[in-house]
Length: 251
Image (cartoon, rainbow, N blue to C red; front, side, top):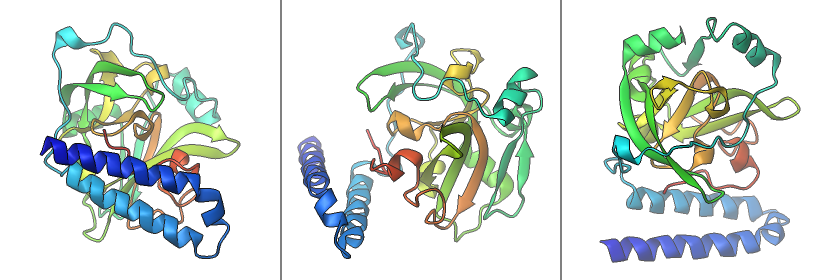
């Protein structure tokens, strides 16, 4: 099985390299976007074979926790909404959960703690090449989805954030319903037994233990349950995906 997985991973990487190399020429043709979309779809299906819904990210012990957990991406959102929350230490913070749900909600950190609380020690792998192990405390995203009642037709969960990457372009990310309901997918409010620091995403961030760091949306403002993300951002499922990154970033 290991040899098979290694072969499939190499095949994915080789295919991705060819696609990227020819991307500019392909995209200039009228049929180009359809080809690229199909390639992305193939990648998702192969990744699903490599990382079935039952697969778990490795969990570590207290002794393995990194002495320093470097922040990635934005470390201090400058948006007025975030700065206002920061000024009173997030006492007014409410996570908006809506979209294709039967009971839209506004949830404080205390509300989330009442719904569910879990702790896990997992490794964060950044696309830049570094990694760190941290102890995360948070609420299972699946418990929040059960709390609001998800429409059976929904396919994705989109995470909207307080930090702007460009002018009036907030960071956003998404996962499918299967990944959202994975037992290691958390809405984390604490890191290493302390409230989540601002550089690491306070007051609430996503932790998807089976995917790379750019999927771990920080500074969560809203969770939207949708059937498609075609009309959100650039339509690729995330800020970096709109710039050409893979939507599925499995490790």
